[in-house]
Image 1 (cartoon, protein in one colour):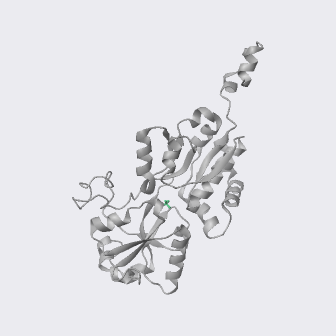
Image 2: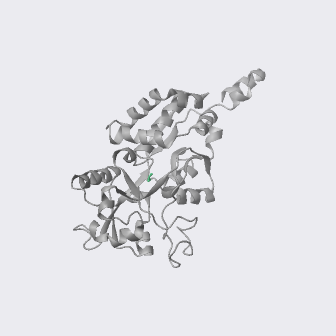
Length: 313
Ligand code: TMO
C-alpha cells in the first residue's frame, strides 16, 4: 500500500496533498553513456545534479544509435546529447514510433563532419572545398588505401554514412573507421610531428577546438532529407550527397513516462542547458587532463554552482 492510500484508510486524507501524490519513484533513473568524452562527462553531471535533488541514478553503457529505441521503451530514461548530425535520424525514427520526448534544444550549436588540422591546407590549398580535397586525394593515401586517400571515420556506431557519401559524390577516398575517439586524437598528434596531411571525422564543440586549429571540409550544404531522398543534393540518383548540418542542434531527449515517474527530476532536466564552451571544457578534462569522467563531472559542478544550482530551484 502506498503512503496516500494508507493515510486515506485512517481518514486523514486532507494531509495527502497533491505533491505527496506526485511522489518521486525510488527506482533508479537510468542514464546511458556512450563513447565520446563530453557525453560521458555531462551525463555524469546531470546524474550528480539529479542525485543532489534526491533521485537514484544508474549509468549504463549503450550503443549511441540503439539508445533511442531503449528510451522509447523506457529501458533508459533520457539522453543528454542528441546531436543532429549523428543521431537526428534515429531520434526521428523513435519519435515516429512514439514513447520518446524532445525535452529541449540546448544552447550548444553542433557540427560533425570531415575535418583537417590547419597544416593540411598548406599541402592542399584549395581546401576547404571538397572538390579540392578530391583532387588532392593522393596526399592522403596510406598503405591500407593504395592510391586512394584515406578518410579516417569515427567508430562505426556513429553511423556517419561516409562510404555512402564517397559513393554519391564520387570521391577518391577509402573510409577507414577508428575504433575509438581516442584513436582519432592519436592520429592527429602523430600527423602533427611531420605535418602530414590528414582528413578525419571531428566535431564541435570538442576539446580539439582549443588544441589543433583546423577546418571542416565544405561539402554541398545539408538539406533536410538528404539522408533519405536522392532528389536532395547534387547527385539526383543517390542520398547522402550532402555535408552534415553545419549548425546542428543538440537536444535532450527522454522517455515519455519519465515526467510521471520522476516529476521533480524531470523539471530539473528541462532546465539543464550547456553551451559549446562548457561542453568543450568537459571533453578537455578527460581527453587532455586525463581525469576520470566522474571526477571531471564533480569538478565541473564544484566550479559552476552558479550555472546549475538555479536548475534545481
Ligand atoms: C557523435 N559525435 C558527437 C561524436 O559526433
